[in-house]
Image (cartoon, rainbow over all chains, first blue to last red):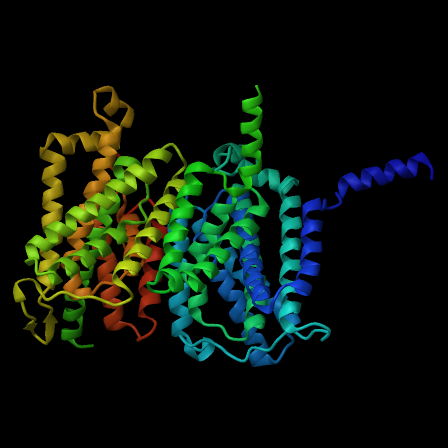
Length: 342
Length: 291
């Protein structure tokens, strides 16, 4: 090929950068591919939970890790995704495959005006307001019972159509983790793109400020709302998959408690690293399963108490000793070893 | 619409408003001195209520039970500062807030372990009974709740205005560096603010239990209402927090009385959110701000 064509190709590649796929993501995909062969159905169902929460958490990596805004209300968009997807199938009989992108779009559309209204505020107050929005969403879902089924929720939500070579749980497991890896690649690439740099410049939790980028001509509000909408779309997709996975949804799944727990997962894993969402989700879901099933039998006491204590202790210890989350542990150890060698 | 419904709503609104104002005062004391948004404030209220119930059931007279409950809750407040907040006091606001969330989870879990799932109640203080007034009912405990909040407000006013320690706390809130340079220990004052917030919370918890009942999980909703009150009125001023608390209480009660059943919670919260977004700096201006 002539050098001119080569050069043109190079320039085109620079203009439209090819997405970089981290090698660890490929390893994760390989592990995901073989796991159903050796894991039990119980393990699959837990790992589905981990994957779904990791997808919602990946949205928070965009919003908190990149744009520096804390949300304690992702349950709103998780719930919107689930209810819209379920209702589209139940009322209009459309395929879950079509309902899923529509539900994600609905979450994003709902997020845009909410984001515009609340992201004008600055600081930790945004977290308080998202909490209130989540509470309002919960009350509304319970009240509009003609549509949402009220406190009992919706049931008999149709499943995804799929080639029946594996069980439905295995299929959902593959779907959820494929989604998680896609979100991971997307988030990783976004972080090093022009948009990612703009987001980092408005990140008040990192090294950014809101006034300097504004002066430099970066529309701060625009980028913050975009990150909020992106996070909502992630949560919406997760909600849709959840609805078609378990076929029964009820409002408590999308309450303030869930939203706070997802935020905690991301803080535990590390908000600036997309892997943080997966690590944090695995830790919290794992702890919950372990303590809910095992601890009351071994130690006595009411179900649910040990996991609350464990969430609290793990969160406090992590924030005190590894403030950047568990994903910063390897770098920390490396730093410590280098320090000792000197 | 009947006049008695409106009257009933106003009475309930005042009672609820006083509860939320008490919550907001606890948030205000800690936020003012340390800039920490203490999302465990509702847990102090819950602990105060649960401990009072427990001490009472052991045969301790009510006043003694409340005092013991306040002491234990204060110890937990001091633990929150010393073990959780102080080691990370240079961290960002959101990290500090998440630390208090962690503490709140731990307290909730321990409470569930010790007391179980059940709801607990207390009899009305001094056996006061309900009063009927033009078709509306004032629950026997309601005047106690209102009285408690008024006492708290007066007490805090005197404490911050007339005592040296109170003035030192205010100095830390206004200008930590200046306070340190005149020999005030900012760490001690921060500890004191957590202790004060825990004490206020425990007294509130004991007083509202006969009216609202208590269980391991009542803390989080109380914290959210307190936050709403504090931000609505302006967390930088005690007056703002009280106005915010009353507003949240009245909005909730009037909405419950006048709006269609089922939708009233969402409507009340939605209206309050709109008011807040219209005036995010708080309804009362911060000191020094004109207008």
